[in-house]
Length: 236
Image (cartoon, rainbow, N blue to C red):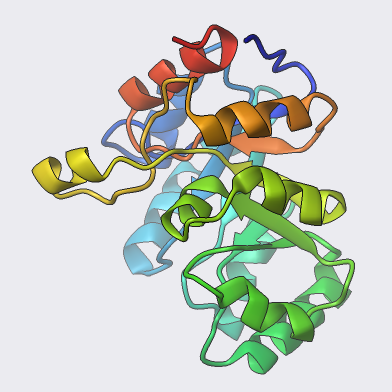
């Protein structure tokens, strides 16, 4: 099975080697298969602010090379609008995690931000049921980010999820799971490379033939990303 990746934007996280945002962008610059980068801001503290300020001009200089998206902090706070304003000239959209403890408050915050910054916030499926808790509070047209690893951990079929929410999905976090390796290396079971012959992947890939959103290989090492790119083009 082969897949043409020309219809969607193939992206990588801003952490594929140990280093800063700029160091990772320099590393990715000559990787021709990658046309997008997800800037990771799982936390936004003084250290990250300083790094972003120091490297901003260099990061911004890659705007013609990469399509940028950004992952906002795990728990959203009104003060994070500072980060949104800073990144808006550069990024296409922002990924957010559902707050299952305060879904109504989060929905109000996102609605407020959307009024000022546009419909650029995509809610990601994370822990089991988390997205379903938030969805009733969101506008029915609000965008989504589908994470295959999270779905697989829940025992869900990514292809079914994609077909259900197709019109709202503007980014896909594409990665597999490997419980055996996780037991050895102590890392997460998801955010793992795939070989190309996994049943869930063979069901999903044909659905992406005309998908024009971002497909982010959300793995945090270049070795795993490179293996997965090879699998997408010519599966093992």
